[in-house]
Image (cartoon, rainbow, N blue to C red; front, side, top):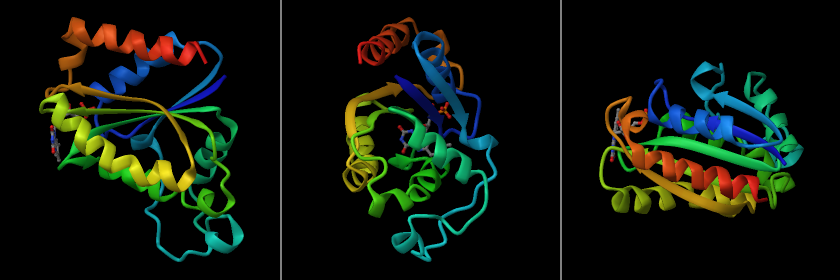
Length: 176
Ligand SMILES: Cc1cc2nc3c(=O)[nH]c(=O)nc-3n(C[C@H](O)[C@H](O)[C@H](O)COP(=O)(O)O)c2cc1C
């Protein structure tokens, strides 16, 4: 299995911690991308990609888009901001729109992870709403939706319960 892990947090915090632990634990070919390190613009809404299947913007998203095509499993992590994924994550999601018409991400496995400062039951509700369109439009195969509760940047690192949940995610991926 070829896995791409994508972190949409602007800080070195909980999302990055969870994804880096998963990265260490999974087998096979793997790539870890921190969106905060990429130079990529927001979608400008020209819809040219609806006809051509390609984005007109020449930036780091070109490389990342090719990595998405390469991967069998997409592991996307984001903090919860105002009941949604972070702006960085949304910017990434919007820039995958060239895959919509071509259905080039169809049937790829998706594991979605969100860290919120509040209770996981609340985070889960917002999480599902935030990524529903990304999954439906791209016909992705969601195989895991995980929620974590953490506020300070090192909360999950210090939380023994998070280790168990991270191990479950690793098991899920390694059993594919
Ligand atoms: C702009 C902003 C908005 C936030 N909104 C929410 C929210 O709506 N719900 C919530 O539970 N936590 C919210 N938080 C808390 C973060 O989700 C929390 O600090 C989380 O641990 C951040 O993940 P990270 O460490 O990976 O960056 C917000 C934090 C920021 C900075």
